[in-house]
Length: 130
Image (cartoon, rainbow, N blue to C red; front, side, top):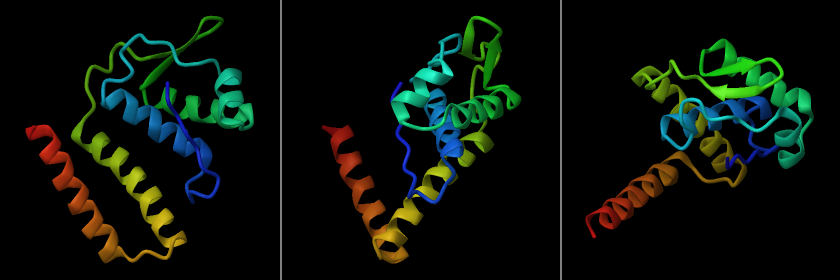
């Protein structure tokens, strides 16, 4: 599972973890029934406090995205077969917040971000057509 966090992102680290796990599930990179890394293992990988990962997992559990089985681990929920359009927009909004925060830190204006987004979309479309 590929998760990266950035303390300078402007988004709380636990929320970055939540957003990325939601994204991995919606992009089918995490399948129903698949086990998430144990809290301590993920905390060590990300070099964050285990309580931060526990908070992210708890939020995901409350949303019905993951299921915690006491003594066994945390798993992508079997009952969550697809992600709603509203959930997809929420995931993208979190990623956009991070992008805009990074752009502000780099002193890049909104117009330039939009131009770059359109440019990258064009490049991706060309790659798909090849």
